[in-house]
Structures are given as structure tokens and as C-alpha cells.
Image 1: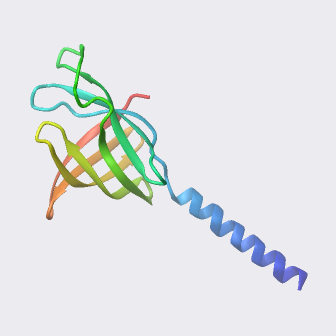
Image 2: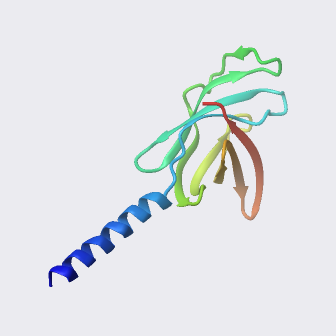
Length: 132
């Protein structure tokens, strides 16, 4: 009986720790790919109720000079859910230039984050780079 209880406890512990390892968090600041004007943004990811969100914290022009943006502090990425293995889905991405929000998915590989905004089955992907 004692062995059965210990085995069950060990199995439950292994399942719970395995689940925690499978779910990957995204944190830090990522530099976006340049837009049509050559501007880039710095997006800081944070936990938003068990999901991942990313807000614009700084913007830079094509020469690397910091510029003021009315979008600073706004969420660019919202409600992303970890699927494990560095993949995220179920959230949205906001394009400040077009003022449109799209379904989104992301994939983290090292310090690179592939971020896709999708309409129907068509997606456009950018690669963002972790800076901090």
C-alpha cells in the first residue's frame, strides 16, 4: 500500500513538473523588424493573467535615434498562450501603422521571435530580436 501511494505521488510530481517544463514563458525586450519608414520598436513582454502580452516601450528612427510615439505603453501583442516548445498562439497583434488588429502566432528560437499576423489563412511574419 505504501509503495502504491509513493508511486502515485511520484508519478503526479513527474507529470506536474513535466508540464511546467513544457510551457515556455516569453519575457524581456525584443526589437521589431523595421517598418516601411525604417522605424523599429522595442516591445517588452510580460505575463498578463497567465498569458503573454507585449507593450511598446520605445521607438527609434532609421538612424537609431529614439523618437516619440503616441503608441508608447500600448500593447502590440496580447493574450498569447504557450503551446510549449517555444510556440505561442491564440492572441492578437496590433499594427499601429494601419491601426488594425490581427490574429497572431509566435515562435521563439533562441533570441529570435518569429511573429505572425494573420487574416484568414494568410499570414505575414516578422523576425524580432531579443535585446534584453
